[in-house]
Image (tube, rainbow, N blue to C red; front, side, top):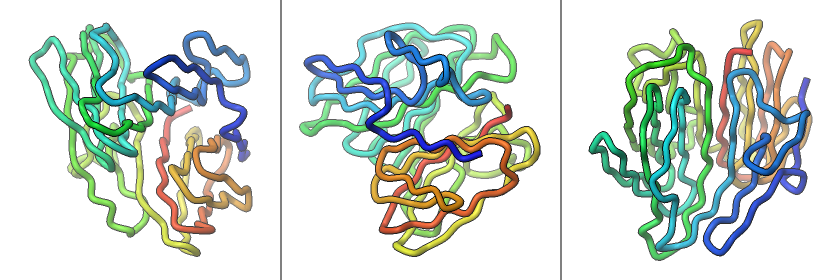
Length: 233
């Protein structure tokens, strides 16, 4: 099943510094039909104004992945971690037994990002944080973060979940395929451009929920940057 979720249909929140859109129910946005997909629980499309950000706040028992589309975000937490993650890169925070963190846009331009929350396979793991650069190679999708057994030993940032975050770029007309074992689902969002997924057209920042499919063929109608999360149901 391929379920297209147009950007215009997403939940939304806006104040003087944050312009957010929610692919799944989050905060004051509640849609019983959009409570998550397998272990994927949150996919927020955020724009953070320069010189602002999220003040210190707690999380626990969640794997939180941040993919930067434009600008950069600076992370600080109570474990002493601090780092800057810029466009095209990814950071992973393991909330585990509890972590207090802040995320600030210290740049002179808006920061645009996807924040993705995935339920861990087990509760009470040690909290932690990491970031890594993944150059846009134009060679299709690469695994950026993963807890899948088949990705052991790769350059991907680790996840405490049977899930993977993939991203990459496709040239106009380029095709890539994703195969899924039984009991696996995926959620796909084009950062820009447009693609077809088994013939279903998705534009920039639309969501595509993929379930009960053994494989999908993704074709770029124009140059496109993609982010995909594959999870256990």
